[in-house]
Image (cartoon, rainbow, N blue to C red):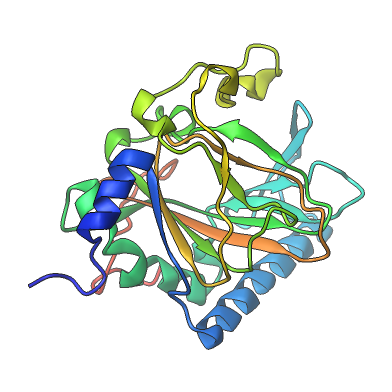
Length: 268
């Protein structure tokens, strides 16, 4: 019997051809409001921990600031005048609602065919919280970032959950359709330490495409799909939650333990 949320043949064809597919409004307004509240609770918890000196030292790499806080690696907004978390990884352990999201079949069941496994485990999860005035993020692929920590990087699939309406104005995700078919692409050589993680799009064929979707939607995408985002020029938030799934039994990124996914998963 087919899984109720399994990827369709058309979705699998598009994923193979373009490197991604989307589903609109898979979460109800009530569910979305719960998730938004959870994200803000996490953000306030991180800000409070920082105010009380509970984090580790800030590591400055090029123009970015990283800090260990609350069991997560927090990346602060590039501009120090904007006191906000840009992203944090992992994040689901900081709120039960986000932990439950990892196990939502609407996210992981479509990944079964893409990963090539009926049973899955979590590879990583991340919150991106682009506030008004938030900075852009350069073109990149996930594989160069993950390759030294993944047991089977070629079998990881990411799902991005839109927690707000995403538009060009508020810094939605842009992708270069079909770029995944070239594998890992050359990186920039003139962008400091982090340039090794940024894709040289001058060598990439294809027209960039903004993935503008309403809140409550989701995007499944390939680890080698070239993607990035522009700055948030609006007065609205652009928050997303990203989960990356892999076959069952494999360890989480940077953590020497397995986090199963699904009905039998722990409430970690």
